[in-house]
Image (cartoon, rainbow, N blue to C red; front, side, top):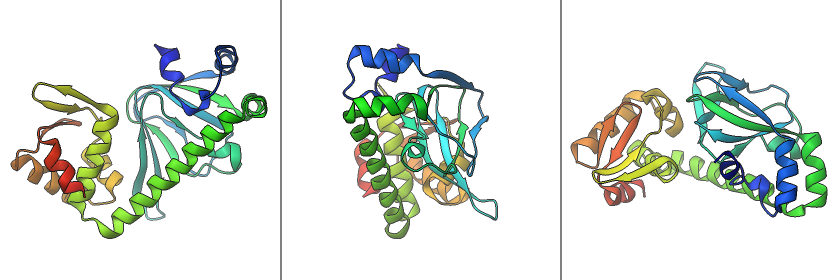
Length: 225
């Protein structure tokens, strides 16, 4: 199971079994407890990470202490690859949302793979391009979309990655507090709570601790546009 999750990462794109096995053998296992910080914004580092189990959040903090969440990552997703192309201080803080198991890889181990397998470099650059595209979308949403629209869009994204279909709807165990969900959409907790309560009153979803059950996916999609 671990190998299957690991090889979902773009890092393994285009590698045959021998190369994949060699790369895996160069990786180290990292485990974190919920709430534990892997690295902080501004820290030096040359490791990239693949999430094997659990969820991790990437966030930035303003000078006045406010926090903005950039991403919530789950199994098969990767982060920290920017350091391979632009060495420098970390651009965000990585914190475990749940208990987390990661695989880490240092620059010295990856560099020979990039030299012999250009497809891996292209896959990593494609990941960075996708992250930039999502960042542009977030900036646009902050300017042009209201808070309920941003909340519905965030819930749809979380459902696509962490959702599980059941008879009564799509169960989305996002593991986020309401404060973290507010940080993810760039709004106050009170405003986000109001939007969620409104969605619940309309029968679009049901609220559960650190999760939601989406009851009307189409209505939520229309509200996100």
